[in-house]
Length: 400
Image (cartoon, rainbow, N blue to C red; front, side):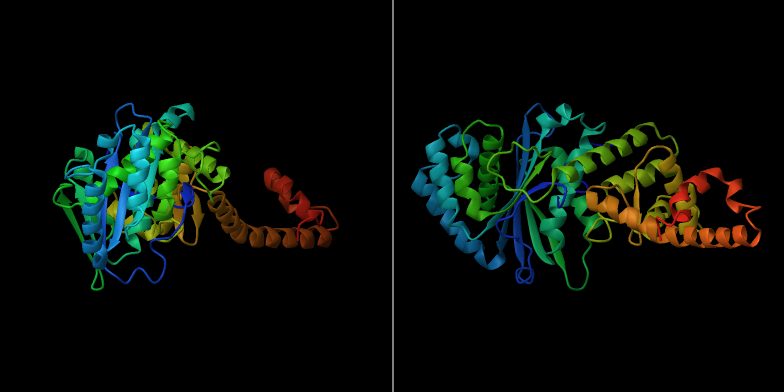
């Protein structure tokens, strides 16, 4: 698997730490055409502590305003033709003043932060790329999937993996229809000036998260921050309000790690491809579940299974085997997924209970009728001791 940076990308939701000052994709803002400028800060492969991606989101009607204001900001702060975080460096007062000026832009910023230093500390991921794929696709789904008319501009100076994987990912997962228009452009910060804002905001957030400086510059940016996503999240993250529980973070980390352990040793191509698809693909629903039909279609398109295979076959011969091999897979009426939150686990338990409890009740009712009718001389559950023990609370009237 290539270490792609945006494959199955940019969107985080429940399981990542979210500071939401203003949700960019709330109703009322989706109808207008958007322009999104994206840049990186840090390196996803080298030994930086932190890797940041910043998306600067504008209404098309605001582009001229913000471009003109950015030129004024550059002149005011004497940064020359290009505003770059690295040029300001450790001059915190200057950085804070520039951030205050950037807060006047009409754009809003969405920032994703991967704390690489925490991955090893927390046990890490067998496939390091999966961390980036998961976090990025979640963030990107959040800022992109809810917008039907959009042009995404990516800095050509970004990493080659970012460049190589960006367009294929978008084309695969966010296909156009009659009511949508999505376009990807590659540009330089001189040609597309708002890339400079993405560079500076991303760099400012990274310096703060790496504790190179205090929070004053970051705090100045807060009014313009639509979302800030941190993965893996830690309780000690300063000055970042969160609405995602530590339990959700732990569920995601544990279930993803378990799936990757299975994937690392899985030799069966069908099982491996299915598990990889569950790990890295955007779900059919908002909660990330992937329909069985979508899994079957993918396996058939890959030429791995015959066209006559159905969901019953998938459940018995693929999902069941993956679970037996150690993969933790939730199921619901919406399909399958690798659990990423307590809610996913509870949804799975509820789904199983909804199917299982009526059957157990029918068995128990029949057992009681037979047992009483035969004067206690025969217990039909004796042939399945495990099931008999499991149903003991039901026989005792403790479960309706």
